[in-house]
Length: 168
Ligand code: IMP
Image (cartoon, rainbow, N blue to C red; front, side, top):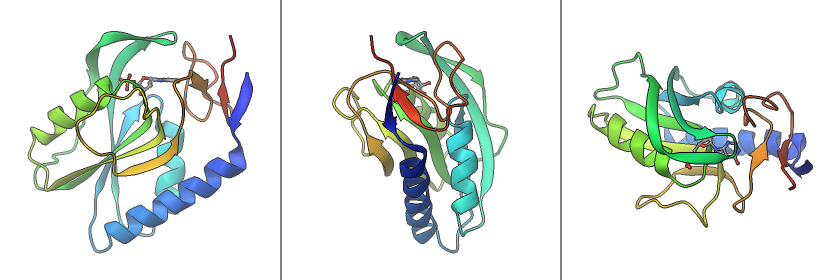
């Protein structure tokens, strides 16, 4: 494993993202929807840097086995909140192929929120197939498998403080 993004870099970028989000949603109370499991650390750090009121909810999706996407998305746990008429921000750890985000956006928009924005800590922009913009991006990375800061390899390595790439 080789360090790709240090703990210090993550901390500083999370603060910047929180400022951008706080500025954009000033006077509003968005619901941040964390995508389990990978986003739990990012979401926890992000909300503590926000200077606005917010609510938090979670959705659980599965599309990966090991380091590969299985190509289909399964909803394992739905949100609990009623998001109709609310400002929603999806909080994702990483966008790779875009499959998960396409699924999530379509599903959540079906509940008629007032607005829907997407935040991702990591974005594999070169490989992601999306026909919409990502509102808040932490870091753009190349198409390599990464672990740490919530991201796993077969459910392990989530507890690492930095983000590492797996070298073959
Ligand atoms: P997508 O549907 O291909 O965009 O993949 C999104 C999901 O796959 C993320 O929420 C992660 O759970 C997982 N994933 C994709 N790439 C990585 C990676 O490099 N490390 C760890 N998990 C990843």
